[in-house]
Amino acid sequence: MQKTVTFLMFVGNQCGNAQKAMKFYVSLFENSSIKKIEFYKDGEPGGKKGLVKHAVFKLAGTEYMASENTFEHAFSFSPSTSIYIRCKDEKEIKSLVKKLSKEGQTFMPLGDYGFSKQFAWVGDRFGVSWQLNLEGKSK
Image 1 (cartoon, rainbow, N blue to C red):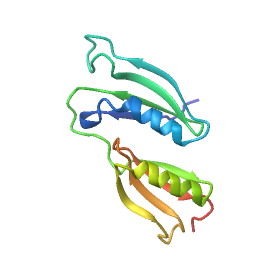
Image 2: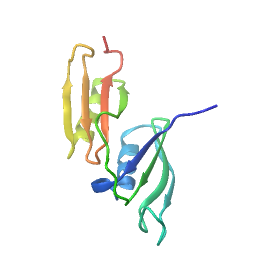
Image 3: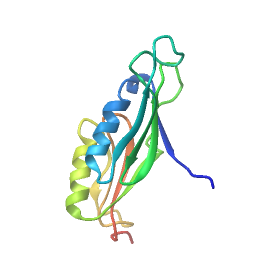
């Protein structure tokens, strides 16, 4: 059976932040861990020694992958693709919005947008976009 897994590639200004980002993310969610990290060795194409060649981590039980790449790319992270979080209560959504947007940006501040009583859309300091919704509050 096929399985989809979100893959985060840290390039450009974000290259060098994958391990820091994963540690930050797993600190925010229960049932989260870094399962595996493979680092580039000297002379390997696409990276330099110490950068993340391939990693697997879990957030709230869902598996993700990450890597870093030193090649020039015409892309980086975009808010049009985001990680959507269903928060269990107001304390959780307020905490996550505060922590994820610190040193990042806010696309939609926490509020009532008609489709949800408590929703926010933020970009974290690593360039990854997050949509947060208070579960059971969607209309």
